[in-house]
Length: 88
Image (cartoon, rainbow, N blue to C red; front, side):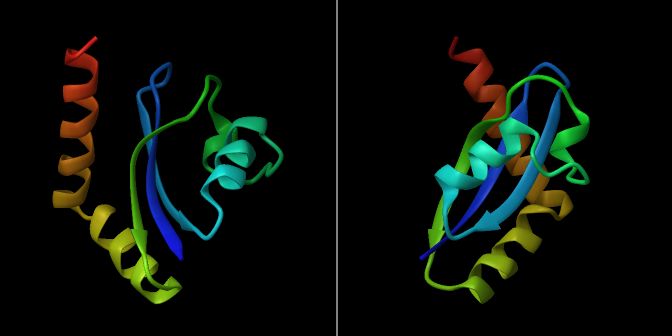
């Protein structure tokens, strides 16, 4: 199983979309700043999962990741974030 996920950094108002076979481990890597050349390394604050989707294989994950990184996909993720903030 693979996961396609979206992270949100509220402090910097940034979104990250990716895919992995181990979501818990990947979230720890994003928040621990171990990978120095990664996009998430550049921003302070914590990254929280705002969306996750389980898919059957890596090819499906890569395809879905590409969809979420499109204009329509980013609008979908931004709407999730806004609805989450509104519920507080």
